[in-house]
Length: 155
Image 1 (cartoon, helix red, strand yellow):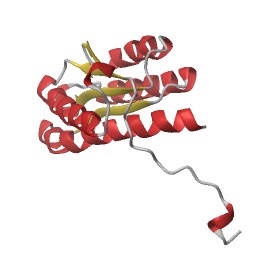
Image 2 (cartoon, helix red, strand yellow):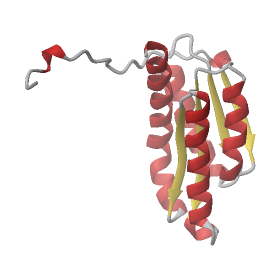
Image 3 (tube, helix red, strand yellow):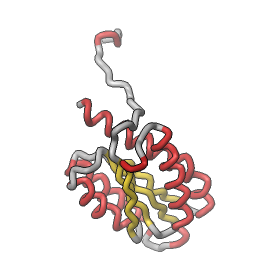
């Protein structure tokens, strides 16, 4: 088994042409979310997703993401979904609950529906940390959504 030539492998595909992407974004910590969205949108377009194939939906906060994502996934209209948001510890005493439950809900939706979801809900100690990470995380979310949508079509 030391020779990898006998193993078939599916390499990541970052071609967004023809893919339909849904984005759910929180209004809470809006400036951070707008930064995530800007980076995500730029990367989706750069990778070939048509602007008319992207729908943005706003929700109040991180705990509302799973339900909106579930409805979108169940519609059969999207190849992949993206969750954009920010949970900042300094702003809420129930940080762990919000961070853990939104992540769990998003994971549940993926497993129940088979629609991949790129989770770019930042969980950070401070707004400064979020601002430092938002561009990279937004780009990553676009890449994950496209890679996973293509993978699901190939499996």
